[in-house]
Picture (cartoon, rainbow, N blue to C red):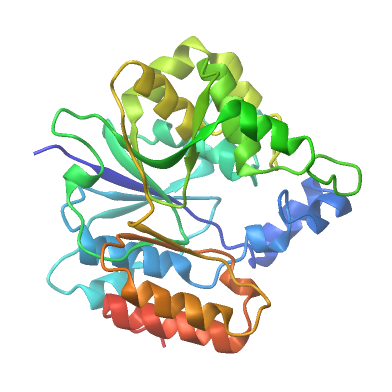
Length: 323
C-alpha cells in the first residue's frame, strides 16, 4: 500500500512573540492589507484541532502528520490521545528552521506561499503527501485513491480557467491605495507562465492538495532561482507563484497528473456581513451528500453567534469536544 503523509502549515498569530516579530519586519501599510499581512491571515481559533481530528476520523490510513510551525506548538497531544484512545496517526512538529536549512537568510517568514515552497524539505517526508492549511478539514471518509491514482499520480481538484480571459478581466480590477492586490489567481497565473501553460491554468480550490515530494526535489534542484524568487518575500507578494500550481501543470502536461472538478466535493465558507449568511451556508452543507472537503476561512471575522454555530456543527460532525 502506498504510504501517504499529511503536511499542515499552522501559526498562532495571536502569540505576542509572533505579533512582535511581524511588526519588526512588516510595515503599517502591510498590516492594513488582508491580502498581504492583515491580522486575519494569522488568526487561530483552534482550527488546527478540527483539521487534525478530521484526518484521524476520516483518513486513519495516513502514515504521519507533520505540522509546520514557527517556534510554536499547538498542544494537540492530550486532545488527540483523549479523542482517539484506540490509537491515532503519528504527529511531528517541524520548525521553519528545519525546512529552510541552507536558506536561513530568508527567515523569519510570515508568508504561506514561501513556506509551502519549502515543505517538501521536511526530513523523512514520503514521496506522496497531502498538504493542508489549518482551516481545511475532511467532512467524510476518504480513501487514498481520492488523492493519488494507483500508480502514484496526484489528483488535482480544481476548475480549469482560461489564462487569456483571466488576464483580461484583471485589467479592470481596482487597485487599493494604488498598489496591486495580491490574489491567488495572480500567483497561479505566475505559476502557469513558469510552467509554459499559455492557454489554461487550474483554479485551485480550498481543498487538501495531493503532491509529489520527489517532483519538488528534482525541479527546485534544477531551478534554485525559483526557490529564491518565492521565499525571499517575508510577506505575500504579487511576484510569487503558487508551487502546487506549478507542480500540477508541469505533471499534467506529461500525463502524470489527474484533474477533477471539485464542485460537489468542496464546501467553502467565508463569513459575510449579510444577515443569516452563515446559517444558510451551513444548511446547504447539510444537504451536500458528496462533500468530502470543507474550508472554514477567516472565521475570526464572524460574529460570536456565527462562530458558535460553526463550532457546534464541527464538534458534532467529528465527534469531538473542545469546550
